[in-house]
Length: 175
Figure 1 (cartoon, helix red, strand yellow):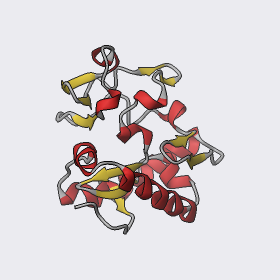
Figure 2 (cartoon, rainbow, N blue to C red):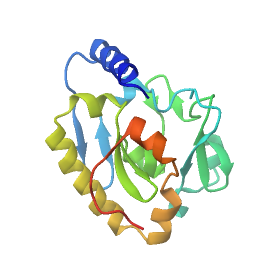
Figure 3 (cartoon, rainbow, N blue to C red):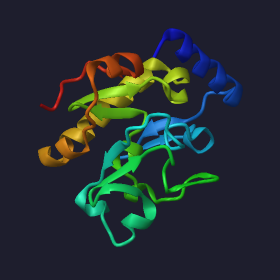
Figure 4 (tube, helix red, strand yellow):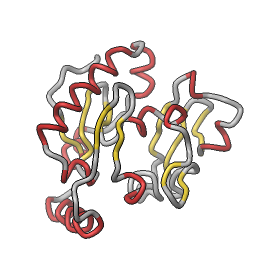
C-alpha cells in the first residue's frame, strides 16, 4: 500500500471519526470503539483470497456454521462477502465467540509475531504510546495461550504485504 493510499484512509477516517474514541485491552479482548461504525476489516474484502481467522476449540459449537463463513471446521474467513456475523450495528457475536483475530484487533498475530494493522482508525488516531503499551499487554495474553493455539491463530502473510499494511511492534516473536 502506497503512502498516498494510507493518507486517503486517514482522511476518510478523520471525516467519520472527528474525535478520538476509546480503545483498551482488558486482558483478553481489545475494546475498540471504532469498530461498530467502521466495519472496514469485517466488511466485504477486496482481495480474492479469503482471509483466514482460526477459531480456538472452545469457540467451536453447533452454531459456528451459522456465525461464520468457514474454510474448514476450525477456520472462519472473510472474503468478498464480508463476515457473516456482521450486522448493522457491528458484530452480533459475544466477544468470547469471536475469533481471536477479531478480539485483538487492531493487533494482529502474523507469522508468529505481533503487529499493528495500520489502516484501522484506532492505529491512526489513538496515542502511539498507549497503543504500544496495549500491544505489550496483548503480547502477554498471547504468551499465556498454548503454543499450538498460537500457531493456529497466527496468520501467514508475505513480507511485502507486512511492510505495506502492518507495523511491527518490536516484541519478541513466538517462533
